Length: 470
Image (cartoon, rainbow, N blue to C red; front, side, top):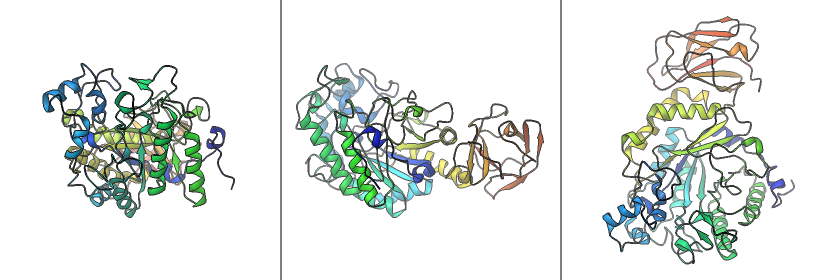
């Protein structure tokens, strides 16, 4: 098999592995030094001038004049406490990688993405290139390696995300917060981004991360310079070629080539100037319809990725909202990468575990409508009295009603695919599938339902043998 060249034309020929398309659910983990102060204003806008709801951006905003984070920092810790002073307070003494991995597997996740290095320039592994890391300081253990081993023991895929393209706290380099050639908000005019010394340093750490932990995917975060400037194509080509040599199916997200992370990303434009990579990654956003190319929505259970102690119950997704979001994303050809933000001691906040348990309980009943599925003719049914999302798997169509429809559910299935007769219908329940009577009338299929099942948040009906015209 010919190798990949460091050109977008060559790299864009890479196929997204089926394991990623089948997995549907991943766990994102934002954990770092920022988990010690664990604070951000909950009412701020993402990417604001002086504030953000993302607690992992604490070391950026604590140095911004007139920012709520700076005010909070000085009132809580005083003016003389620097971000690096929090390292000694991050002991991770309760971190149990096996407990985390077991929990994620129970929920139904297929892969786990830990922040290998966030924008604070603090690697969570034993890096040869930076003594400022979790193995040398703070927890004094290889957090990436420990979790990678545990996750793989449970049969899950593993990756460590890499955010160093835009580090707002990088000891050892000149420039704002130690990041060379940057000013607030992006590259200095005409500078084109970080200088070659920093680019080499950044990529050396990333290659080390790849060599040491053999990640199943590369999850870049927002670059503030073009992929060409960051030598991203060379790194991705090496990653693909190394994986091919070992027969390993891997994936790379879109963020090595663009900083457009919102819902405006159009997967139809893969291979153009808009983005490159195996899948796109809208953040705290989703798409209105089925996308031709697979994608991955990512968000926290609350407003923040990193743990934010200021968030309360109302700042988190309800169990119903989480399940509905998951079903909606899958119906539109996406995966959900849902984030947990552990506390500094290594425990996952109970409210986050509660939401994930609820999702796992729903999956226990309805997982066959999700895992390994593909989009159907349409994602939503505009003719039904309640919101419905469609998925297709192993020759069967699944209609998931997001709310309980009552005695019957009307579906416009015949309007999208020819039916010789009403298909067998079964409602998935805690006690197993329950047969449902159904009838055809023109472009409508009416399914009669039994008593409302015990489980909550979404009700999947299997329609046997319905073709997928897509």
